[in-house]
Image (cartoon, rainbow, N blue to C red; front, side, top):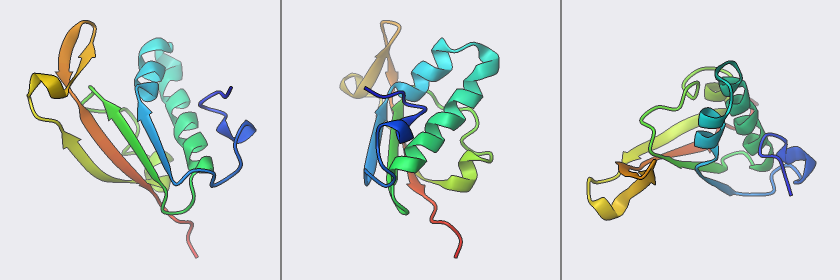
Length: 116
């Protein structure tokens, strides 16, 4: 059992080459009080940063077009957004959100190695 914002308590550094998120970031953004949202998201990205090695990959799938804060420090200084793919409008390739199908957005982040 682990808190997604405190993965360092459950896993050693660089434990996973790839981490896949399907809904955790969305849950943090939807369920938290507005002032706490970006702080939770920063802690989540920092926790994933801890468990991935340099060059590790973090894949986040969401119905959201934008995830607040991913293009600003500290997230943007630790992760490079490698690809954003908006899935086709085919109903079978959509996520169900609030009973409605929405296009899925897949973001692939690569961990920026520390400066030499």
